[in-house]
Length: 218
Length: 235
View 1 (spheres, rainbow over the protein chains, first blue to last red):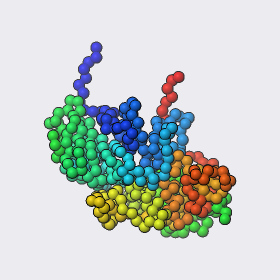
View 2 (tube, rainbow over the protein chains, first blue to last red):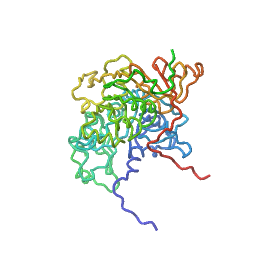
View 3 (cartoon, helix red, strand yellow):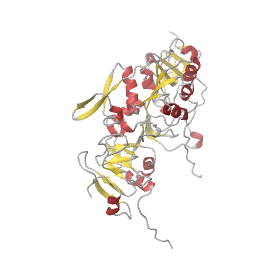
View 4 (cartoon, each protein chain N blue to C red):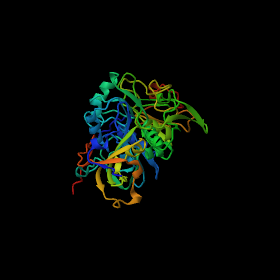
């Protein structure tokens, strides 16, 4: 007999699966490092979604078999990958022309903080070693739809969806949707407030309210 | 006009000077001009400003020039995997101009295309735009970024013909193409040099005008930063 397990909130995989619901047939998509990468495992069967790697590739394939690893074929996280029959390669200037020019339909990124006005901070913490922003600033400035996937609160329990970002910004007024382990916030356009549109299993509206300092529409 | 040189040292002869700016191709350790980096290290040239997306890792790629303290300043988007870089940066011995990845690629491309600057939305409202001119176009704010015109470009290609027409391989193209055009002179190292007429002119990625000198760098022992694989399904 299976025992009913009380579930509360979404796991990392479930957050990625929720983000995957935003994919549409024919989309060109760029996925960030971490939870966003897991979105690739959740593309609905029968749907054509082309993944972009900002170093210069469209059509990212799965990790290669051990005997097919190629040092000349890596993703933006510098991991070895494989190509698909439909893949193409190009240089980094052309790659970011696609990104900056608004030709990529969707990007999924992690974040340290998101503000109620859609600002995002995900590249540096003052006082810690700065590694650099990589392509994150270009992505949030140019991609049509920006989805942030992040834990609802930090390791210290502090809210991450807040009135104003305290960390240096990656982009200002750019985020369209936030998926956390507790819920989903979305806004219709960059002038409207975020709205709580979905709760993870076992999470109440009050709990979200308690762990969120940003203003949003309930 | 003979473009093929016997060794990297010979190909760089007369081109290096203290305080110069170098644009380097590569992304991580993928497609880095390692023979030319070795020769620059051996030359002892100092106070370099290097525009490169990354700074290598300890003892690989540009990490070698950092270790010997030949670099004064890096213009990069991401410098994560490098302990010596971190040490010098935190000690204030190394200057870093953090530039968004796409802005860096475009700065190199623009520099080589005779474009002094361009307006981009990338970085608006962030520290990247501080102290730079901004301007409204069609109701949106853009920031002015300058093209990079380097004294020297160093790039790694796959195949070249004897005239200097060059092809890259897979994601090793990355910054090699914009870096190649962003310098006053470009030196390329390649894995194979073939006779003129062997490459399809329709498939050239970098036309010969950009490659003034080149060397055969093979054999290469290409490094992998993160080896990720999947298992074969049982038959």
